[in-house]
Image 1 (cartoon, rainbow, N blue to C red):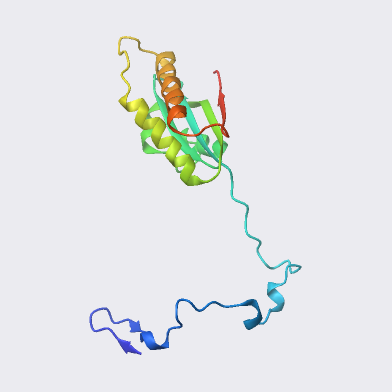
Image 2: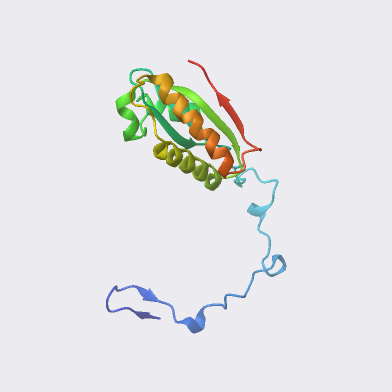
Length: 164
């Protein structure tokens, strides 16, 4: 083992590293008592929380916000300033109310792709600025969501619109 002159860290020579194709088999490692499934001290792998995409609407100004989370009630409290961690972009529209919740994503990647597509289509669509008000903004997001459905497979998703 030698030290790098630049970073002063220990370098392990490649000759002592096991080859990448080398796999550890269960027979080559003896089972320790802590690794048995009956031991309460062993942490079990948590099940992945279901991802959802949400649309919240401001109760004060005609503004909406689209986001992704695994725990919507906590996230809404963050947006409303009750808990730390709300998005900076949503601080000006407090208080926020749920407008739409899309559930059934298989993983974070799928949820983020859906969120990104919804935001992108909403941004690119033209909107009549002469119609101020929350209903016009929500209608704009709803039309954008219907266009997202044409680009992505949304048959497995549960889309719930909430009236305030």
